Length: 321
Image (cartoon, rainbow, N blue to C red):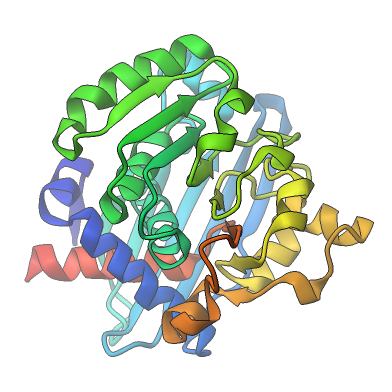
């Protein structure tokens, strides 16, 4: 059994490979080739946290089996600790023996960024030039990297509820992601720039919308990545109403856990008929996606262990040979 840390994974597995793995994982999931129970969430109210247990099996050409154990403790940021620490165990699908332990915190960041990158690649306009990232916590860097990987952006706005953190993040990525040739700008008022953006990615645990959906321009693609419980509502209902297409990572997961989508359904703001399907179906049938340059499209993800087990399995296979 081998332990693979962040540095080993990052050095051996690219964002492009992660995006491709996420597309494969969701395509297999939507085709019924996965056994993915809804994750178990255990509240830890004394410390404003949750523990999540995410097992899964995907029976593709190379079967993938494993479990990820994740904690979501937002207050960790104050102590300069990861807010979403995690550990991933991969298992040999032939024997059931654990064959590797991975830095699940980095794996979560990588595959969560990559699934958004997959959606952006499939749904955003090819000529997208202006982007917006909302939320610069532990997920922020890989979310930004995935966006830049699939589209040739010229400018990327950065917003966080903590303006100092947004400025520090923008300064950091201007150096670490300089190869992409993008201008990064931290903004204090997110709604002042929403109307300019071709792609908006919000990755927060906010219980209220993170931007004004009425300001979204025709042709924009929106990714709702952070909210994963019924109490969280980072996507504005106005954006869902304006959307021509709304895709999920998994319908079961989103309808059980995504407060922004479930709340809109319960109010009747949108109906289930407004949901266009799962991203895996779009991988198989690209014609189901954007129909015109003016379409507003939305991708909502709450995460699924199908992504974890497939991405982790591919990492382990590549490194172990």
